[in-house]
Structures are given as C-alpha cells and as structure tokens.
Length: 312
Ligand code: CP
Image (cartoon, rainbow, N blue to C red; front, side, top):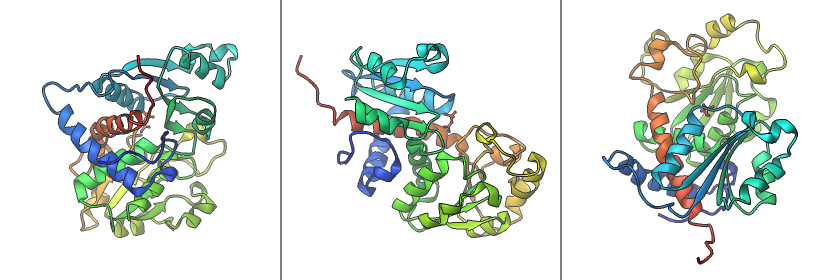
C-alpha cells in the first residue's frame, strides 16, 4: 500500500492509477474491519473532520460520517439549511470559522461546480469533494469501480455503459475518468438532449439506443433523471423516457447474456429502473452502498496520512 499523490480528493481526474489501486487495497483491509464484531479502529483518533453539506444527501453523508466514526475521528456536521449561510455568510467565511475550531479535514458537498477546488486554494485543511454540482463525485466513482471489481473481477477490458441523464450527472464524469484510468471501455446512453456534445472528446462511445448499449456492455450503471437540475424540458414526458430508456428484469433477461446492474441512488423506481430489476440478483446497488463505507474509510485514512501534525 502506498500513499496518495494528492493532498485533497477534489476529483478522479487528478488521481494516478496507483492512487486508485492504493485506495482499493486499503478499502479491502477496512472492509474486513467493518465486518468484525468490533468495527472500529483508532487510526484517526487525533483527527477532526467536518462534514459540510450545502446540498441534500442520504448515502454520501451517512457513509462519510460512519467511515469517520469507524476510524475514531472526531466528527462535526454542518447542513447549510440550518446554518448562518441563510443569513448571507460566504462559503470562505463559513469554512474559516469551522476551521478556527481546529478541524483537520473537510468533506464538502456543494451545488456549485468547483466549490471544493476554490476551498482547497484558500484553506489549510484537507478537502474531500462529496459532489460538486454537475462536475465530479469522486468517492462515488471509486466505490462504483470497487464494487464492479468485486463482482466481475479486474475492471481492465470490461465494457461499461452509463445510462440516463449524463448532462446533469457528476457521477457520470467521475465514473468515466475512473473507469478509463482502470482500463475499461466506456459508453454513455440516453436521449441525445441529455448527452453533452463534448463527451466524445473524452474517448467514450455514445448511443441513443438502449438495446444496442445493453448488447455491448458487461456492466450497466443506471442514473436517475435529475429533474431538480433541469431548467428546460429535455424529453416529452417521464412516461416516454421510461418506455425508451427504462430498464426492467424482462428486458435484461431477454438479452440472453448476464449484465451487472449498478445505480448510485437515489433510485426513482418505475422511471429509470423497475423494482423487480433493482431488487434482483443482477443488481449490486446495496453492495455499492456497503462498499462506500470501506472506500471512504480508505480515502480518509490515506489523506490523513498526509496531514502534518504539530507535536503536542
Ligand atoms: N449517490 C449519492 O450521492 O447519493 P446521495 O445524494 O444520497 O448522497
């Protein structure tokens, strides 16, 4: 296991392949720890982590908090909806006030792309991006690739299709970077209006035909339609979207081949995926959530190893 080449986790784009491998090896060890009767290790006993969520989250927020507690870190939580942000306080003032309380690491979700990068330029703490607008969601991509590797073996050479609202998805971009670094082939599939024109410049294949995409792939990562980020109607109706791009168990089993189904959550059951498929043995959705804790423990542990600690 080697240290990371970065002091912050802002995006997968900044990581070396060796960083990803080191995170996976460390996560393997922590996965063993969290399956023990005593699920805690003292690794981050001297570290204080602030979880700053300027946007809603269920999985990422709880997963980071659990990962920090499993590592014995001191944890403080901040949600912008119940904070002085509503009184006009800026991001940098908010964070500097939190850091004045001797915080070592910041996990931040923010609706604006680039917010964690801005923060990393202005504060001393180690910053982990927990999702910045439509830009990146690095720990989601890491836990996705880790879960894929667990189910299908080496990611190298595997064919992965990301289906749905690519335009508004930070999960898609981080997954593309991560999978390509690990040697997978990536395709995106969805309505042409939800696929950015520049995506082909990243070296991904593009299809608007769901059956073609499913026939091509080994793994399908299904995304929800991010209606909260859409200012325009990108397709006629959700019903029509489901008819063209919704995945069901019958559709999958009619292909005559095995495909692993992934979804970062939250799921809109009956829109992009039916319940019978989401809850089927084809799906590794809950394994993704379970692995999220071990992968985030690995990221926190490896980044904490880079923090210079002052002698008491
Ligand atoms: N996958 C994911 O980021 O889910 P949350 O928005 O619930 O954190």
